[in-house]
Length: 261
Ligand SMILES: N[C@@H]1[C@@H](O)[C@H](O)[C@@H](COP(=O)(O)O)O[C@@H]1O
Image (cartoon, rainbow, N blue to C red; front, side, top):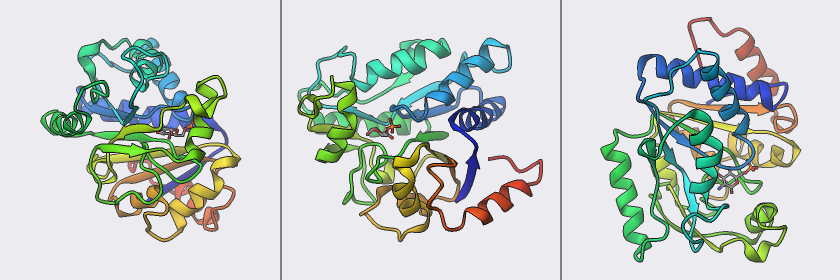
């Protein structure tokens, strides 16, 4: 796992956007796995700015959803599909044909999860998966205790995650859906490159457990230790509890020009 410590969220966004642009240079129709939450926003903003300046052709890129609430009506402004339409598809100039996601309003949600797995495989798999990290170490909506081999399925949110996400529901954790669909940890690990972003002091404990703790279902993000091409991009605050931070900085500072993220 490569750990890159950046001065702030914007610098992290630029770095990851550069990796996406490089990927699109040799795979213009790459399938980009996109996460919601506040953390990846600087990536989407940097990508949109690069495209607007003529530095990237996003016309053929495709995006795949990581997770979704269950129980919100189609088109609800806080459904992750709506969020991704606002924060990713619209700024990148992509239409609905570029989008892959599970149907969380299907009468048979379990079948919709299986169907989404099939759709991801039929699309050739995810080339680069962007991830944030929950304060409890979750990735996607794989809460602590999730099987490290799990596939796309229904999960129940912890009260902590409902509390963290209450800010999108008028501050009321009771309005945050209890159930969600998430790509499984096994699904996420099939992406060819996984990039986890972490910013802010409230991610420091989770990030330390993910990067330097034991591989354990207790911290779902620790599963990235198994991935052959995983990159962690963290700001100083999120990286503040990494005991090997000095080594990570040393590695990145001495990285050969030809070796990209
Ligand atoms: N399901 C999402 C995750 O994909 C995201 O990583 C996490 C952190 O969000 P934020 O980046 O806003 O801290 O929130 C939600 O629970």
